[in-house]
Image (tube, rainbow, N blue to C red; front, side):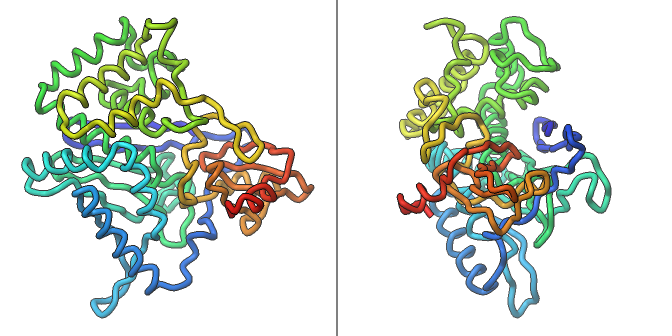
Amino acid sequence: MTRLIKFALTCGALIVALAATACGLATIAAPSETYALTDAIENTLTVEKLAKTLQEKYGVFIQYPTVGTEYGQSSVIFPQTLKTLDAALSTVTPEMVRQVSEYYYDRNGRHLTFTYTSSDLRGPYGYSSSPEVMVGSFDGDTSQIELYIPLQGGQAIATGDNPLTILHEFAHAVQFMLANQIGYARMEQQWNSLMDGAAYGQSPADPKIFITQYAAVDFEEDFAETFSYIYMCNRPGLGFSHRLFDEPDAPNPLGKKAAYIERLIARHFTEINASLENYRKIYSTPASVNKLGVRLSGPHLLFIGMEEPRTVPLMLLTSLDVNEPDLVWLSEIGGWYCQDASGNHLLLFPNGTFGRAGKNVLEDAIAQNLV
């Protein structure tokens, strides 16, 4: 799946475009069993309590859709949704989020706001038959980060309540704040000077220059992608320090960008030691990890240690002869364990990748009290 991003100085949108798969199957995703609403009142009360806790923790405002009448409103989001928000923001630390939020309050009279919006995220299979879906956006004039989530009970090819989308949009808020302090033109010039003459628009993008393909779109997206991946990829199995240096003590353009963001954080934020400690983990975090007897690596492991994501790739369930109720979420590996109709032991991950475990990792998880 190819992701495209568009961002202006005051407003940005993260857009996911659906690409055809080799087997021609749609990458529509089905709601996970975890998100089956069994008790609307309990769910609403839990969401309200958690939202209040996170608002106080990070100094932000959280909005989410509800259904019902004036006599009783039920939350459309789930506790897991806000737990993912917490997991993502905790990597940059509450201290940094608070300072960014205070900047927007001083500027706009409104703290940084995370707004969840229900939307048809089925792309070409949706009501409007669009090849793209918007999963996140940031507007500097309203202090708002909008995260688009599937309609209640709906299907989707993507969802905005994932850690990378959250931190990507937060990075735009950071960049907008810093650009107003440093000067946009000056900041862009400093950033571009780190590229060793490389230009945007590369396809495929050079992995020693751009952290992802759509980081090669322009300066704003490059900054947001680099920022979000550094903070989210600071756990074993996600490391990419090998991409930051051509040789010891000789950073390449990607390494120079990482160092530049670190300098900006150290210079423009206070009480930032914990945030910088998390940031600097990219220089030592292993690129692979052994979990439950299986060696894992790659950015599809972003949900290690997190709540089960909102959607399960239906394409994989169909092509692998797997039934959704048979999936077991294993936070330890950030993916699902299951068996297909032939009895093969499989691992499925949120971004649509899968691996053949070759063993029943569920038995190990149960033995370790991880399920």
